[in-house]
Amino acid sequence: MPTLGKDFSMSKRTARIALMMIALGFVLMFASVAPVHAQAGAGTANAGQAGGLITTDGARKAGGALGAGLALLGGGLGIGRIGGSAVESIARQPEAAGQISTAMIITAALIEGAMLFAVVVGLLASL
Image (tube, rainbow, N blue to C red; front, top):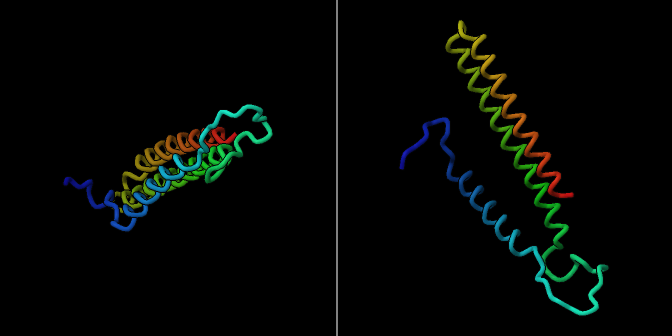
């Protein structure tokens, strides 16, 4: 199996936790929606409250919050990796500090923009 290098390797513990979170997401995605039953006289008072693990509205809000949180986590990790790599690069080649800083700021701004968009979409999904 090809590796991505020392900087991009993932520990077995982190991979196991990520896999468990994905499995939990699938379980919640399919177990939280209540089955629809056609009933005469069923009013709108109990809409979204029929059986199941959680209501449809609650699952939507939890999914939006989880998506926004994961977007923030991924963006924070990405910007942290960029900053750490930039500092390490500047330490190795101090004469290229200006170019490295410029590239770091541009890349961090792009990541932050995408992260902000993902957070807004996640929060809008919960409305």
